[in-house]
Length: 244
Image 1: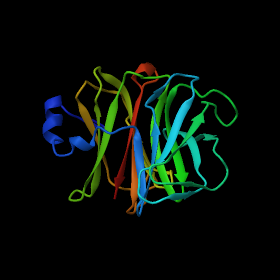
Image 2: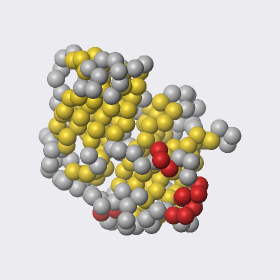
Image 3: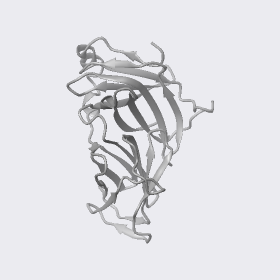
Image 4: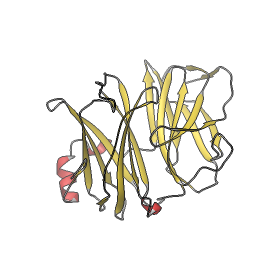
């Protein structure tokens, strides 16, 4: 297959990923940590079209976070959609404390955004976090992703599997974001693939940016989205934080 290799069954998934499967099923949140300050963003997996999108930032570390929070919504490939209203002032978030924000699903021009999959990026006190969600599509479709760094082969292996109860069919889109919320690598399969419940596929990335430059060490985010223009009920998106 071009770009994604599919497993033969759910049994293979259990055997191949038995050592890491506990890290695969993760909540819709990703944390960024600096010393003992730890920022986490929470967002629901699915929102009905036109409903408010609740976004929560929480300090899950042991030191305070101080700064001016900024939150923005992007398409799956990193294109800016809209900023999320926040208080334009310096704030301090104590350990265990959180702040809630709301986005009205409007783009920068005040128009309702179309159904699809989206990325939210939050920056606060020198920390940056990312999460993903869906609007109006694929409420019953669920995927998870895991990025494994194969140092022997000098590549990243991006696994994505169907954790739902029905098959999912579409184009598989892979994106790697750096800690600043910029897309450094992207790949989309040239044809649609179907994953039955429990099946998984893997995409191999040679740790080189889309422009051909080597990608340095640091924290990165994998975003995997399944899109199907002819059947939007098949849309799904997942994300994960990993380190090179």
